Length: 217
Ligand SMILES: [Zn+2]
Image 1 (tube, rainbow, N blue to C red):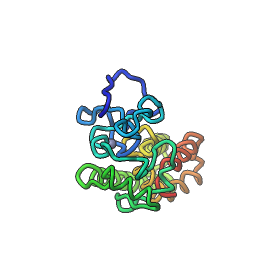
Image 2: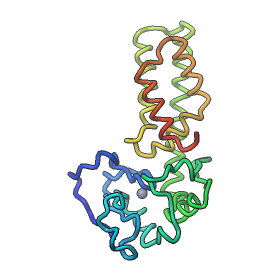
Image 3: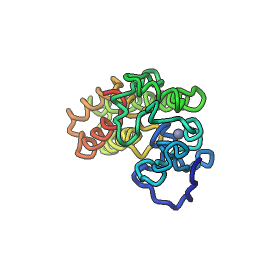
Image 4: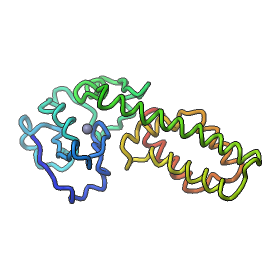
């Protein structure tokens, strides 16, 4: 059972994502927002109005979780628990570090192939390609073959845009952040940026956010 909220409801904290579980965007019509009761109200009626028991989730995750008894068989609480302590992301699938992690994967269907693994894979492939292109452009800038202001601004903006994908307000940002942090090309780009004094305060802040959002340390 879920309450439905209009789109005008302000939920900035959750960035309009299915924060608790799959990270899909809630603004798309197919994923309209529902308010999920972490502890199902059928078992725990006293919890119905406790605010931290209410989380915006997508319809599919809400259905998957349905009346699963979260006290008998706990799953990761998206705000109180740190997902990194319970889950690891490998080849775009989640694996468990703890029993809590395993229960979450099963109850929510976090490795649903069509809906989630495929989407994470597409995002990862696209990011890796973009990072490769950016590494070429940055290398050309570094070796003086193309060192115009235009090129410099282009590589800085491109890197910032790519790193933004790994920050919380973006759909599937945990996947993007994990990919960015583990790609060799990103490490090389960073080195070249530092060498050329292009690694500015905004990039430092973005990196902090990406590290926060990544599933694997
Ligand atoms: Zn979801």
